[in-house]
Every structure is written in C-alpha cells, then in structure tokens.
Length: 145
Image (cartoon, rainbow, N blue to C red):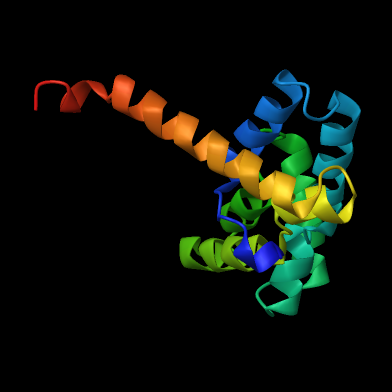
C-alpha cells in the first residue's frame, strides 16, 4: 500500500501533518509521535559518513568539538570547516541520509494513526488544495505573465 501513496517532499509532509492536526483528523500527540518515529529512523550524519568511509571516529569527535564552539553550524559544515569533507561529500551523505528516512505517510499507517485509504484520500485532498493555492497566489515574477 505505501508504494501507492503519492510522494511528498519533507516540507510537504510536515505541512500535510499540520493540516491533519488543524482539521482534527489526528491529534497533536499523534503528529508528534509520528515525527519522533521518523526522526528516530533517520541515521545520524556522522554514522552515515563513517559508513561511507568519508569520516573517521576521530574526525567526527573533532567536528563535534568544533560544533560546540559554533553551535549554529551543522556537523557536516563543521567537518568541512576542519578540512575533513568537501561540499560534494556533504551532499552525498545528506542524500544517503534522505534515503534512510521513512516516509511520514507510511508511518501514519504503520502507527495505526490513519488507515491507508484515509491517508491516500487525505494526501490527494491536501495536494489539490495546495494546487488551488498556487494557482490563486502565483509567485510575484509570474503575475505579469
């Protein structure tokens, strides 16, 4: 069933979950639980980078120490600042991380928050509403067209 579900970007997934809560289709507690499950299933950047043989444990420790001095930087940026990774390496790790991320829609079904048919119907309604909003509010550069 989950392979039949429409594909949503991570940003769209979050907006969809917020819409379900706003329309009282699910509770805020259920939404928070599904978000935690999704985050828990995603592999940490350092672990992925080590598995890809891009960073050693010592380099990760060094990058984490650097991050404690610059807490607004993400771990990949810290590793790059220390000369351990290139931009292309960070992009590869992030792509691999994204692959390990479970679909929020699948989690809604597996956690028994909504039935598969309900999720599919709600996603389609959400996407239709998004399309209408996009048509009603085109980006400023497209209004003159």
